Length: 93
Image 1 (spheres, rainbow, N blue to C red):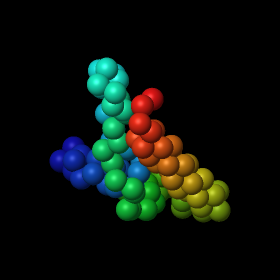
Image 2 (image 1 turned 90 degrees about the vertical axis):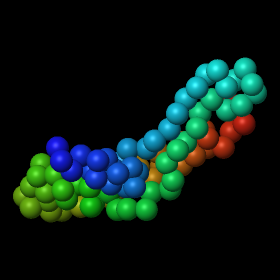
Image 3 (image 1 turned 135 degrees about the vertical axis):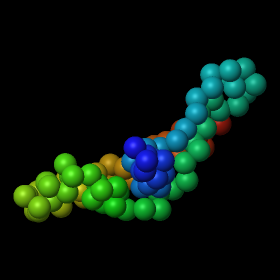
């Protein structure tokens, strides 16, 4: 638990845990109620996964399958960030 803030920061930087806000009251002001606070991911999500025993053991036991799953995760995180960015860039939802 002493490293939880560092883990959270890494999760945000890897795009695993995007930070955003939604305030429906902003619609009344003609503003977009969705605000994306996260910047584009700068870290490889593999760094985050390698810190977890459950994911590290998957890599050791099934390296080929783990590589496929990690590639899928990386693509999914990129797609998710792009969707959130589009929501953020729209004038009004």
